[in-house]
Length: 399
Image (tube, rainbow, N blue to C red; front, side):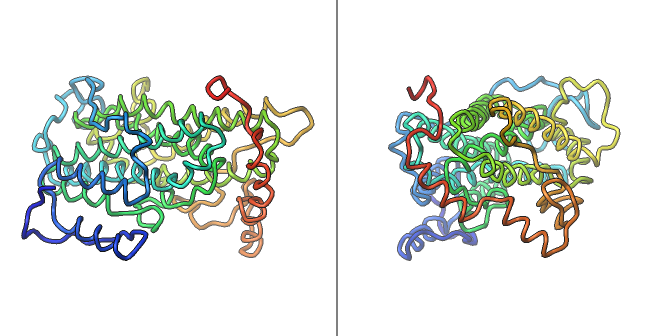
């Protein structure tokens, strides 16, 4: 690895599994990178540090992939009709450049965080088919992080190199990823399937909103990422359908996983009223989910997050209804938790509401959380179910 000597140390916020590993990682990360090849060395070390066995994806090539994007002209906002920004200095002001940097490294942080969350599931997949699906999801999320770091290092100079390096220092399991959703534990394969069905669905929304970006390298990154993301959603949705069809996992327990990850997904859209969302739109950096088909401009730029969250909620409800059609008549049905439940971000952050949206006292709320989120008692019920080979139906891929 060719790292520059005598450059300032980057603060370390990660921990490895042993003191020696921590020391080696700290030494490895101590100096600033000079180019993307240096960053790639850090990436391979990161894979080892989180315990990801690269031999499992030895035939996969990690690379940055760009397509033609969505057009040569800026599609919305104050600069609509102008040529898209190809280089950082094409962007008129420093505050715009800083905001774009922030937007990109936040996206990259989610990609690396998800692999860290899923790293312990490889040996517990119910079938080889499911294991291969998990590995594909993990390697593609890692490639998405790779892509964002390529954009950072290729376009943002020393600031981009620093942020790309910091993306490999944080750890989900040390609670240091930038968004709380990507520090949450994924305990088992139901967690993974609910996560890919609903949290990766939020990812679909975020990538779509960046697809029409006025910054051309970011726009050209999104098409290949969206194609890969579609498989992640497929994995989650079909996996949950297979659980419902098998009928071995109690619906009441499956509902708890939906409560956990859907309430997390609601938070990922950000504050209900957001000045940052308004600025991103005015500058053309981040549009609406339905920007390509929208017939009118937004009515309130500061409410763009809430509009996207409502579209997400509607889509979630449609997916859950497809699960319910697989449940025999007279049996309990699944539902989306109310959007006020268990919120950490937005107007309902810290407010005490039930999954049905009813207000609760502090004592009632704490008792309610124990009842409606997955817990140790559920794990005891699930343990013998997981040991059996029939808790998910067979697919063509694992027959």
